[in-house]
Image (tube, rainbow, N blue to C red; front, side, top):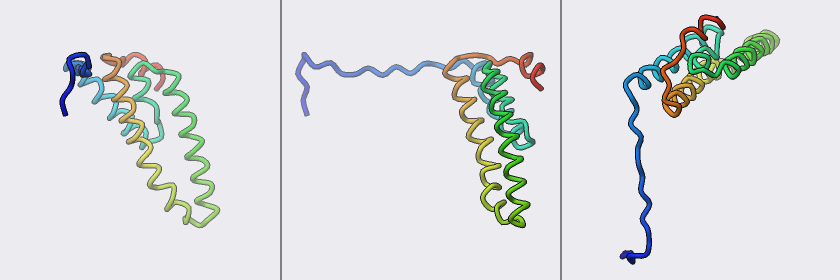
Amino acid sequence: MSYSPQEQQPVYVTRQISPETEGAASIARWLEILFGIFGLLGVGHVYTGRIAVGIIAMVVWWIYMGVAVTISALTAGLASCLFGPLYLAVPIISGIQASTYMKQRGGTGSWQSVGIVV
């Protein structure tokens, strides 16, 4: 396949991520996963600077856990077959989202905002 000189070829440029941003993205991911498993989903998002997203995620996660426990109790534990995998998958997915946001933003994270929320 040949191209004429008038046709422009797309140019793809990859942005370099600083070591500080890479480290902050990793911290955001692990904060979200670990705290999410222990019931505080959203801490990684707060670390990235998205405080409202983090608080909303935390409240929705508490509601989800309440509903999951109630339905599991009513079904003698059978519903936990559905809720268990989600309980592990949601913090992992949310952690990946927090990490990706940090990399796109190029930030370094904020422990101060985590301290205020937690």
